[in-house]
Length: 406
Image (cartoon, rainbow, N blue to C red):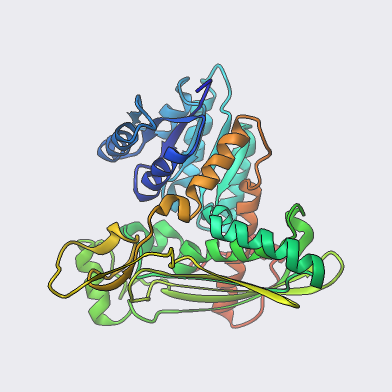
């Protein structure tokens, strides 16, 4: 491997570990290190990279500034919690000032921040640092979606006209970490956490391959949020117990269900729709993770929960939680789906391959901080629509100061 991209991760938790595992399938890169406020977390993630051969010399760092300044690190993947995005980018800026060679790129996980105002600040910090940026939305690189979209546009749209409706939904039983459940750290609930996937994937499916993002203009957003499960006393008590009293959903909730419709206008004036839904209140084997794309004479359906493998365990088989089969599922017995290679199936391998190529100068980045800002604009419009019971124009400048739950 000649001059591989040496990647540093900021944040040593669940999502970083997914990225590290995906790099087994990505050429010309190596994990140089992991930074986290918890050195135990940083050392554990670095040890994972070492153990699977993608970072034989991966080291633990104590701060974003330290890893950004290190000359053995070429590019950074920001996987820290939402509330830490601005401090992390400030740390990267300060560390980068001490480099002899500039950073080759900075990626940030979805969502870009907690509010549109914060996302714009992250965007501005990226421009100040001067490195190319990437917005980590794995669904746009999931093999089933990539292939399905390519075929429908090439065969269906070419013969019968462009698609006009995209649907995307994602539901599971709730996040792993306490910070997701608290508005002060996450910024919101399931709408912010998961609908960022669905809104962006639905927009991308409706966009003609090769066309720019602004070939579709969002003109209306209407949405509904609700608390369906975790607001109930029994389940809010479960959350509190699970997280050692750190989460008090009964007294300080956000939302565990969200649905949104976005109306889009094409460059020639055609109206298109995306319908998206997300929840943390789903109970069942595996996840619900589905996509549809519909046009005049064709349609596509993708069930991400169906990877072609099912296993069955009777009630006589007991064991730990079944997340070794599918992440975030809440079944250990009965018939359950099995995802043979989750990092590849969900698009992590594809997106990391893309950004490694982009930061090595082989291609242009298809998603940047600018795109993360536009996703956040739609999410804030959805929150405002739900709160005020009206349709929102996502171009309204007041969204730049809007903060849910403030």
